[in-house]
Length: 235
Image (tube, rainbow, N blue to C red; front, side):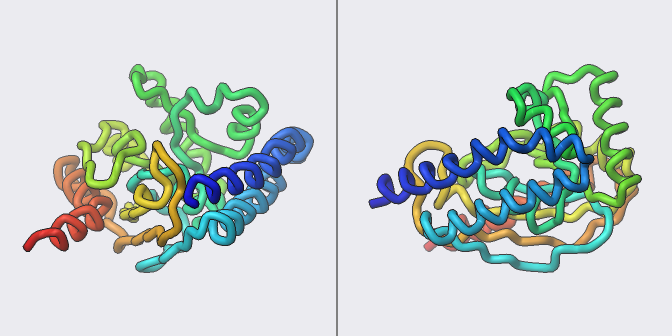
């Protein structure tokens, strides 16, 4: 049943997404704001299809803050980057540069205002990432990063990538950690499964903390749901 549900979701989702992507360039020529509104329509469609076809619900814990902040989130599935972009209202998302090379979509993503980063970055490339993040702040947008650097399976908690601490120091913004539990319903391999995705927004952490402290606090908070799940399994 899960395989059938996944197939129906993919037919519906990609059947709508492909023409929307092909129609995005004319919208992008109108400017970033119309493109973000267009992108939000696509994100709302994803939310609807995930809920009504795949049976995936979303549970929000904590408060989504207003105003420019640096969101640091766990990454377990395809779902949460898109759902967080919808909830936060078009943040500047830090993503790997390879994604911006996808024909049409990549160009639109840059017009949308993502922050492209080379994970094998030189110092100059990292400075470019900082400049793009500062441009986002000038427009009143928040910045969102997945500080572990990649999508991980439930239970995994790799160390934070060095780019997070540099971005935190440069932007001088409060950090809002976001713990995520989504890999059990939308795994990297295998079919989607009905269930609830939990997104837990932590309390803002003040700017200006030493690197070891901010990394330790953010790592602990984005992995809080992992810790709770492990504790629940103990006899």
